Length: 407
Image (cartoon, rainbow, N blue to C red; front, side, top):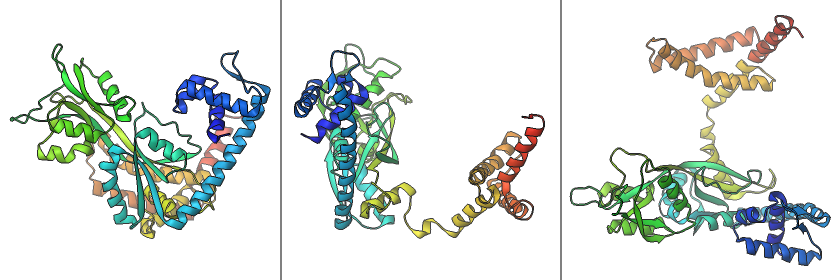
């Protein structure tokens, strides 16, 4: 028996659909069905009632589902702990990164992180998006770095994986310029004279985002696909030779745009032929708080918090947290919430309210007023009401119960 059979079966039990589970497991439906049949052959009994729709589990299947969940969770925890020991011992951080990000975003990102975090050893697995995600799921890397767009989400369980945003990227059309600096091929093209189109191969993540751009375009686009590849770098090379228009991430063409070797192929003043994407990092959550995490865990903490050093938690930050507690209310969860909300909202009110009332108030004046108000409130609450805003809120609620809302 293979563990992926159990994972397939758990997916089927939860979706109750062979086609949907096959899609989530990134296999064809016939292949998925064969794996379920192989599991049934191993178990020696039918696990799925195929005569009903949606699919139901047999009594044996329900027992198998409970046991499969327990076995997979145990195996997952064991593998995570073992990999944590190995990673902590080697000090090597493994990254699974799609090809385009591996060439463009990743080198600059690593340099910027090392400048603040310090040097670390890394291993890069440059793959297509699907294989990069599977590398993380199968435990073959520490971190996954990939594009993200809401229309093309990854099927990663948030209870098992955590995410942090690293930046943003823009996908837009580019082409080689002519002697006057204008694009040789400019969207949207004309009927009967379609533009040569350099596209991504079917199934490519950026290809699906590009299809969304073209679908949502305000006017009809006339393109003729003359070339396709999985890699944005391949499309860029063809665009540089003038073979057509290609949709490329900005980070991949930044140097070529500055040198004038590529120009935007979108109509002048039209921002409809572009799509904003997010660059995210994913990792599998530690099995426990006490599990060793090594360099990969420290790096994740640095990326997630923006820093992993004492300087990030300066005296000013410590005093700010203390003042939140004093103003909000000592020894109260509600007080902590009120204190944090007060610290966030007061600067906004000091900058926006005078503007709404037509009263000029400089940024420096607003900052001075903020410090004065904070200082006055700290003195007031320490002397008059040590329990802060939480106590005032409790008192107000009690009075409202008496009048005008007795109950």
